[in-house]
Length: 601
Image (tube, rainbow, N blue to C red; front, side, top):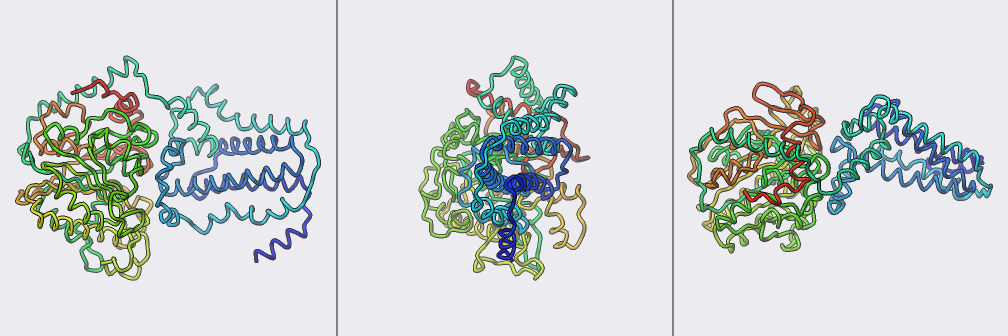
């Protein structure tokens, strides 16, 4: 079929100017396709900016010979096709367009091949179909005619006017600054091109460490003062200090949502071991992920520092050298040895740079471990936990260890001989079926790890904290979950019952307890600090709350990778976050200004 189309095209002698116009039209259609594939309306503003930009590009190439114009537009078409495909894949998963700050995260591309393939769709071939079909007409038909300088100048000027029409109206007539728009809104209003122009402006104005105004300093000081004044009246929890001088082991689990706990598929428990741990330990049943653009690394920031991530980009990449008040630093003051273990490259999420600033004395990454069992992006969870045991056994006590799992990362591909669940036919080789298999694998991995701790004698003197880093299945996957459960799920029920992550605390002989206070990852550190006997004055700059002292609580979900709109979750209602919500604004100012550099409290 392809050969017939190429033959037909070869028989058509394209007028050189029309071939150039055809390439420009194809570029324009690809911008529209990004909108269509991601369900974003192609507004008048998006049309004007996109059309004007392409017209201006066409005008620039019109200064050159006809042959140079064709080849130049073909190269532009190719580059934009690659970029727009990447934009489409990113938006289909994260529900937000690419940003310049994302370029900080290029080291994260290693090992993500499976995740990219998981997102590809047959329709994506349309980004490159014209390039295949027009290759010979562009490069084989030679045309050396000169450019038309007057026409080129007119096209360039007209393109610039078209592209500038809507932004000029918004800024100078309507008096609405671009910074009031988030990335997705900018795409809706001005198209992909307009979004990236605005994003570049934001990067230029947001690049350096921020110098705080007196008003901003007062805003930060007032926020923390009021928060600590409230906590002073709350007293002390009955659990204060029960983990004092015990080893502390944090396990951050990839893409782990709480709804799989105590859930069955085809008559089998999905997480049989963790179900038992939940019954024997403390289980916080209403904890929400609060990550933004840093994904798993944001979960580490939230749980290790009790700070919300910055509003743009990944905090670990943008501000790795900041001074942070962290759990590892607090425990080191009490004589703890601190280290982290992860079965991926040390540069993933810039961990090798930021971990020393979070107080970790040692970081064991994949190059420090035996690469004996690779699944997906890196070392399998079973191998990571197996190799963690001798590290923990040899460590001076007491120690604090952060272990990060990896195998349940999208696309949730588990080797067939490692799949323990017998799934019904309709779930086999589906995203949700693969997700459940990966969660079962993770459950088995933790079971083997806890058994190893018990056999080594470490478990009796250790406190285990297990939590999820972020969602694995999003609201866009709700239909697949409904098919599995054979019932409808409302949007509110999804937030109330499916969006949460687990937060489990366990040590042998503890009194089991379920705590249904609403909270988020930001509350994990102050809650654990209470158990470890860390005094309140040491937690002054933690933004989270001690969940043992809260009855109803709240969860702030920032707008970002895992939430299309920022929301505030309380016991009674779910409401949209107001613009410039104080908690998020203060956290953003604190990190961007390196506020804690001179704060020793």
